[in-house]
Image (cartoon, rainbow, N blue to C red; front, side):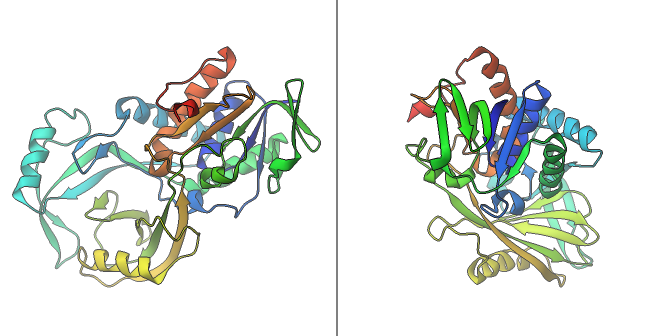
Amino acid sequence: MYDFIIVGQGLAGSVLSLSLIKSGYTVCVIDKPGMSYCSQAAAGIWNPVVFKRLTKSWLADDVVPELISFYNYAEKLFGTKLIHERSILKPFTEQQEKNLWVKKAETENGFLDPVLYKDLKLSEQNVIAEYSKVLNAGNIDVKLFLESTKKYLVSLGSYLEERFDHNLLKNTNGVVSYNSISAKQIVFCEGHLISQNPFFKNIPMKPAKGEVLTIYCEGLLLENDILNKGIFVLPLGNNTYKVGATYEWEQLNDLATEKAKDELTKKLDAIITVPYKIIAHEAGIRPAVTDRRPVIGKHSEISNYYVFNGFGTKAVMLAPYFAEKFCQNASRQQKLSIEVDPERF
């Protein structure tokens, strides 16, 4: 018998499964690749600043050190490179924006660079006059992380590849069983598909579709840092870059669209002047909640059913921190903060 069945091996399910194993628990992850493409399409950027108000992102002081610690652990476990620490370059478009940056840099310690820079050279003909930097930012190689986690789980005999059928789930005398698998508890990490989960259908989800491009561009002089000007441009190495992202709340599917491609290329063309080639176009549905907070904790009536979901665009940042909190609370049967508890709804 396992300690936990985990449904879903996206970013949230992968982080939680590794955290539980690290804490001494046994897990069985059930996942069907292709059910949701959100984590596969994700750029994996962590940004500790809310650009609209130039304030710290929620829990930034706590979650950034935790994400570095967790992904460092994963790198050592898998013997591969996952973390890419970078600055985010933020060009100024008007004086008011620059003035706000200077003011906020005094209080947002450690994240907003107080230095104002000049002449960011994106190409021989393309120079951005003034900009500054978000510090302590970067990205995780999400695809490699997911692939490595799956291989690790398979090696432990802790992975079942199939589409989870909620109708086959049984809970008798405190034991959860699914076909031949039994566990003390089950955690649903199903992304936006949690809306189809009969046990947590009361969670007010507000999923958002996002699309990203991967481009090949020899003339772009952006080697390490992430450029953010209406869209992000993330260097992947070998003259390739990921560009995104769009937001769509109506047409919720994993299909790439011409509309989104046009939106991204128009914004990209307004930033860079060198030619490029689109080599990939991906889409996924972000599992966001109406109040923009994740939903983590146990079912109000079934004590051994849990949810770990709703991270939206912040999964890379938030999942390691809350996975650690989940592990700490699992042993003591304590609730997490009301800010993330499903009972808040």
